Each structure stands twice: as structure tokens, then as C-alpha cells.
Image (cartoon, rainbow, N blue to C red):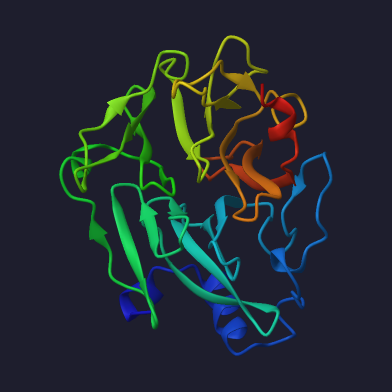
Length: 291
């Protein structure tokens, strides 16, 4: 971490990072095993890693690398600034590795070699993640919140507009290059469609939005791809996942076993960030919803 990055990190996070990097057992609980050593959930969503990842503050967008050896999420500090927090697994134990300023919303290519950050990305090397690069034309002209990629390197991404509306587009590889982005159909794009997550095999797409058939605020939805390549009816993920609160940014772990998402637990007070938590639940409901 460079000095200018250290100066932008909240003191409580910096203290945790320093102690975690020295592998202190007095500051953080022992996190041993898969999924940061957490007891896995059943069909009812629960907060992920309470007291370690999920707190009474702002935690959002948690994702594992495809090898399941690193977990990155976004944390909001008391200064209302967002930071990346990374945990890495070493000898079957998890340790806080880095804290750095937020750069977009992280997702990973299925092979684990690229970290996507909206319209930017990082490539992985033996020494770690390299410097941030732009995806280039035409993606650098889109106000992208979240971009995910399939194993075919097809991009699915949202466009955030100033009036808080948005649509989801996709871009395939054609003749070795990404084609001009195309809008998905109106069954998916209702005017408020955000944070797409595409399955590695492109068999389904999960996203969030506020719709008339929802439970209140933003809900999570899924659409399965038909045999002819079109996208099927949009299905609400149900009242175990969706509530009258804001739910968004769904994500399936690389092993396909668990579904992560975000929920607003309480609003912010006096301009502070809201209490947003990361939840997880068994992902078996996806196959149950498949036509």
C-alpha cells in the first residue's frame, strides 16, 4: 500500500490491517476453512461473517476469487468514503491482506485472471494484481456500476443514469474483439435494472431493480436463457431474499453453492452511510426456479 493510500484509510481499518498482516490472533478471530471459516447457511439468508465482514456499518459487494482463496468487499468508513477490504487464505486460515481506496465494484473473470472494476480492470500476475487499466472504447464512455463476464468473455453491464434509472447491455466477442454493446430486451430492462451477474455458462442472468411486482424497494430477479438464445420471463427471487428493504448486487460463489446479496438494514442518520449488510444463502433455489 502506498503512503497516499494509507492516509485515506480510516484509522480503525488501518489498525485492523496492520495487526492482521502481522497475523495477530488478539485482534481478529481465527478464520479457518472455506468461506472465511463461517458456518454455511441453509435456505434462509443470514449475514455473512458477522463481526468480521458484516457489522453495523456499510459493507457491500463481497466476492470470492474463482480459486476461493481471496475475498474482497467494499466497506464504508465514518468519513463516508468507500474502501476495498481483502482477506486472503494461507495454510487454510484467512488473514486481512489489504485495505485500499475503492475502484468500482469488483467481479472476476471465470478463469480468475482478470478483476473487472466497471469500465476498468486489473490483470493478475504472480506478485498479485497489476495496475488498473481502462477497458477502452466503447466501454470507457459508459457510466458502468457493475460488469460481469462469462466464460465466453461476453460482458454484461449496467448503465447508471443521473435520474436513477438504468439498463443492462451485453457485448460478445466477434472477430477477436468485443462488439458494440447491445441492449437486452424489455423483459429485463424495465428502466431500473442494475448490477447484472451472468452465469459462467450464460444459462441465467441475475440482476436487481424496482418493479411493480416487487416487495417494496429494489428486489433481485433472475432470467434463464432459452434454447433459441433469447431470455425468458423475469422471475422474482421470492420473499426469503427480497423484503420491503433494498436488496441488490446478487452473486453466486464460484463453486455454485451459495448466493450472496446486499440488503439495507437501516438508513443512515445525519448524512451517514446506511447500514448495508452482506447476506448469503444456499443457491439451490436457482435450479428450483429454472423452467
